[in-house]
Length: 145
Length: 65
Image 1 (spheres, each protein chain N blue to C red):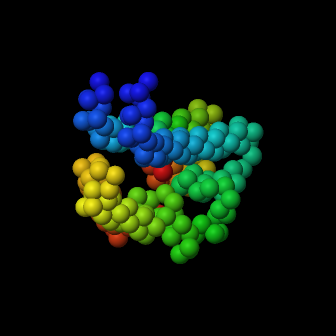
Image 2: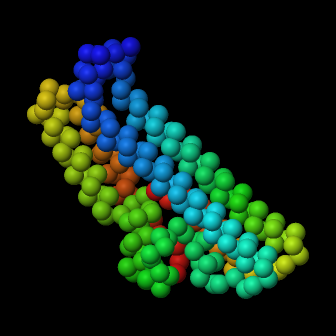
């Protein structure tokens, strides 16, 4: 029991990145389910001989949330939203990973909690994600309107 | 066992990354297969495929996240 308690005390912070991974996978699954449901609706429209609404077809091309109407999705704001929410890039993420990298690098430098080595690895990971997100943000183009 | 964990805990990150990558790849595959099923459904029922449907289906395949 003491072993587990020691492990938990040492690595409790692992819960955060791990839950991040799980939440990401869940989000991907929900997006896929949504796409599949849209296909089912189109199939039903086709079976019943009715014309398929154009808005429904538009929803197929990208995983846009339900509360984001098609008009709002287009244009500059829409592109920004798209990058922020669904792209690998987005200035929000650049700032987030940059801040995390800087914070963990500082924690490693001053050997906070006596875990400098662990913080060094985390700082490297965060720095890599910061650079990757920065490149993606500068180079990724959203789908055409 | 505890020593192993303390030495290699960081392996969790690349492993989780690989697992998530595989999962997303599998979702992309499912997504494309479902798209083809829909086209097949139209073809089997002898109906015309609505204008723009193929283009929309061939768009962004990534599952987001």
